[in-house]
Image 1 (cartoon, helix red, strand yellow):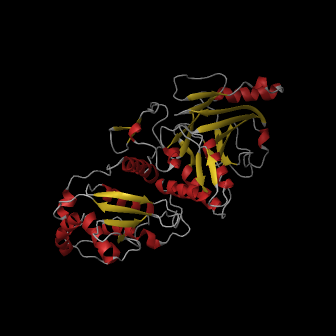
Image 2 (cartoon, rainbow, N blue to C red):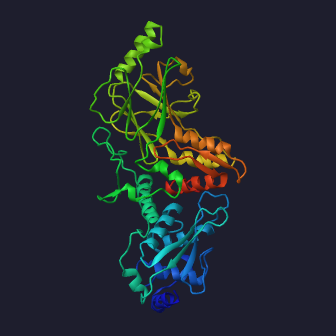
Image 3 (cartoon, rainbow, N blue to C red):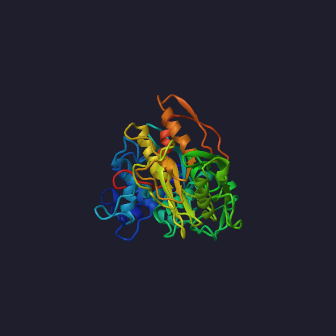
Length: 454
């Protein structure tokens, strides 16, 4: 490894001749964009960035701080290397551009992972006291940095975990930072998602999911497209519970009336019962039947990435709100109306997880996760919700489990078990510190920035 180090640094002198370091984020004078390896070695040698340092005498291994942005002890210095690289490449100009810590970190890691002569040696990013990663130079024989930076790039595919991390970051980055203007792919024309393939949004080549392996962070299973969330669906006619079913299927769920409409529509139908089974008032029964009939193709609900989407396929107008599990909040208006001609987002996992972390830290209320739908009538604002003809409650049980886990908290040495209630998931035994770290990691992967400018 000493030979590799000296071979590398034989070219560093020439690289350094062209490189002018202006503070932490210096730009080259000879090129419009610096090369990651000579730039990084320069930062390591100067030692001006907090926590960025060589870890062995031969200078073949180096450490990079890898703290999550939502940690209470997070400081600006903890992200210095990522900001410096963003400034050096022109991706960020202080005072002009909006700070974006998750993107800085992802871009830095991607640039480093693409170099075949560098590998991740130790991953301590989950260490509650000193989160960091250690990289090392592993390929001897390169004469200078020009050879390092023109060598074939691996696109971060040096290991299974790298493949998984890059695919997830690519998927979530597109989802959170550049959403399609009309939401996810059209409900009525898109085929059912293939359970065997995961398509990279920037590539037409399918990547077999079996090659991804289990996510390093078990909570990332919540975002894997092939993982079906479990939903507890409860229906009320005039405040009386008439139906409850727990269902876990991939793709679209469609809430339909007893007279199932177009059976060619995609998705799994959930049939609400005829009101004659549970109601005695003939007038109310007639009104409820009319609402159910007008459901037509149904009220569709499905997950895409970190969001839940809904669309009505019939004539019954439907209003929705996120409320408590025991009852909807009728003290204010609905959060929105489910659109008919396009998809509408009704829930975002990012804010929920961020609020959950705040709740764990004791500085916020418990986050809400229950979707309430008022079908065929206006939202019961300032009125008893039990007077509405048809109300439907949808509970993603994985979110209920996450909140239950947070409430069980306590001492960091205490282990608790949580079942995510999604397909292929196994019960997890986590300490409170592990659980919080995984939640912070999940927020970071979703690129949902809640610190500073949200």
